[in-house]
Length: 328
Image (cartoon, rainbow, N blue to C red; front, side, top):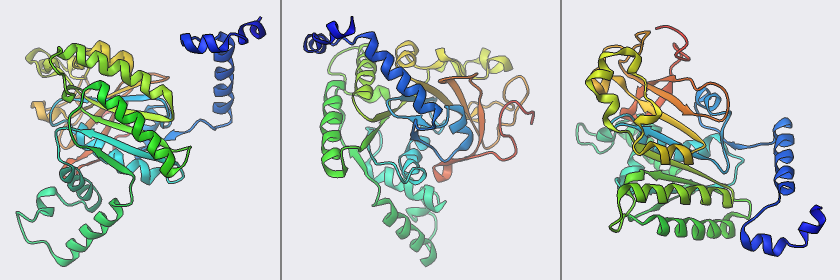
């Protein structure tokens, strides 16, 4: 039966149709590759986060990181851009970063802050003079940053324009770095695309549809940042510890973003909304960042806790409390 259908391949291709036999072959190949430990993605420097998302950010996945303003999501994304290279030295890939809120120079300042553990204010030398030793640390960090394959998109674009840039840039990367070169697309954040008169809901729906299409075309990972609505900051939620943790419905225009994503996590700093303790168990909030898994590939989503070092544009795993399953 399939042999007969295979004679129609040109037509099936034209119509964008795939016979179930081909899908079954791909499924078996993936199952075997997983059995042999050959399914690879990109690991982060946070082992608990890797465990949370199934080991790594796999190729052809869309990871969404949500959070309210000040939750650390932009710093997390900025850190990922360099940390993915540091943690995956044998992977061939480049990063294309769409960040329409921050200048390219400011993003580099954050990376230097992360590597030197100096605040951006200290680096800019506005508070006190930089010592020769500190300046050498800054120079060394800046030198190492120059070796990363990170490219910045400098102006707002419509979803259609961004997809065209992604495709053309990935083709250039393959010519420059080899045919096996993957592409990580960082997008901060979903509300900053150019709308050209269309409603925000329509723009985000279009963006999500295109991301789903683009991630499957080639060896690509998309990491998008998104805002939360104000529900988590409401008086009622703050008064009821059972309502402290972020929910799927807290994501701005949640249905479209959630459905298109393979992985959804939310970064949350309870102290920014003046909580004295967090959740029914009364977890600590001072200098803590919680990462909540809203959608993961397998297993029960569970939040994990980090030390807030956002003044250095980084978060670090909390050695005292590995997960929320342990009391403070």
